[in-house]
Length: 274
Image (cartoon, rainbow, N blue to C red; front, top):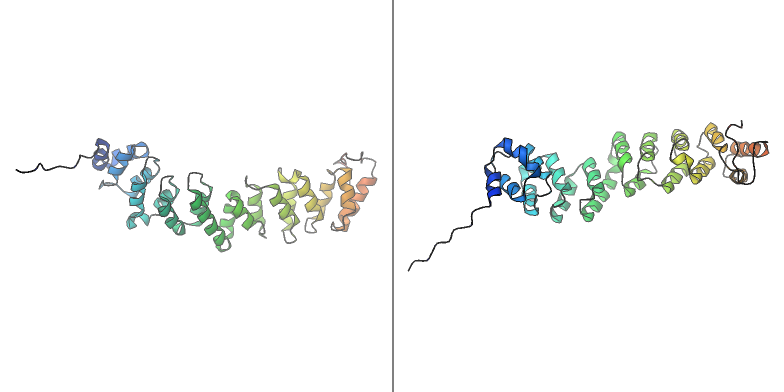
């Protein structure tokens, strides 16, 4: 008696649709299609890198589909595809970690800052990017400074480039201790220190201002101008701090003796001429 030959279950309708879709339909549906449609699309002979990038923007893509994309050498020669796979929240950890060494600095920065990427992968990307900082051109470091993570900010704080430091000043992840460190550095560019003193955010911080006054690299006109907004208490501190350049201490002394200085904790008029 012959047995009944079993046949495999037919693929779900969406998978067949993805496999047989026209290129126009792929472009229309991939960004929001179901996981089954995406799996079918990977078998579609009309799938090109353009359509594949749409697929990789879809969070419904499953780990197996992403593993399949990452395993295709032809597809992975495309920089945008590598980036998209690395940034996808469902990319298997092993696949994502293997991709990190293949990413350019800008892509590494994206991975570091992406909350959807596994923290292990983010840390790996951050470590690799820090190791590359010295090899980057100044323009690239400037771009990186504007969006760097906390760890990468630390790698850029000792830069002697005015442009790089200006990039850091506008980075929303920079904190006051970073600004104080720059303000205290004996090798910081005077132009950068002057701009730090006038910065809308950092130029108002007391510790930053005190560090700038004590730094002999801070331009004298900038230091003297800053004194006008100091309290009497801070002016006395500056006056007796031998780390502060003598000309700045003289300016503080003159302000303290002026009739416009007020109270123990009041501030000296900004209009008083030093």
